[in-house]
Length: 255
Ligand code: 13P
Image (cartoon, rainbow, N blue to C red):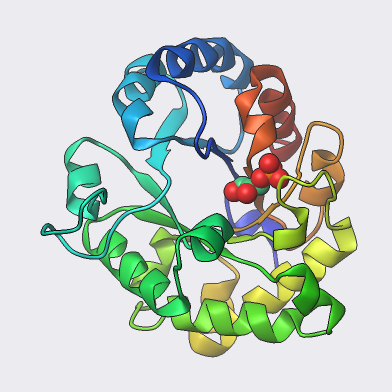
């Protein structure tokens, strides 16, 4: 498997942080710091920040994404936002299946699959999150969990559509805890995800898919994680809220 077949993608996930004014300020700070990146740079921001973020990022190499989308095109789904709505305002990326959505908002592998389908139908690039709970890792079922999440999320997704899929392996126990998976653990699971993709599609197709690691990735540990053969980028929470730290991660992915 050749790492050079795929472009590294560093994506920030701001979660429920920042007002539009704060979004503008941090993006203006980030722009010069990431201008020379030799990787794709994406910021997935709260819906309310999308316009401000797009305005601030205009003309730069920072692309703006959303943190979720509903599976229906429109309808009686109070509080939700659809994929065509995101597409209509120029959004390019959307995170689907984040563990916080699964844990706190009742998302299942099946709803994740429906949202992936809707996002692809609208031409969005999906950042699909998979990852095991601490209890699942302790019980030794990490690979089974991640394999099954990946397989179900991608049901009905064609070979050609794989170009619009980025997978983020995010062990739940490493999110926001300061406890990062070791580089070996991250690479091992990312490799297993690539194997599943090889089984569903073909090994050559799998070798082109960007598979990120996420979970307490920061300015200090990014280089080691990103140097792994099967780690093609990062999905960054806390450190994406700090321009300097985020730019160090972007630089680490650009080597
Ligand atoms: P942290 O980087 O804050 O651990 O969050 C990771 C994450 O959930 C990104 O989606």
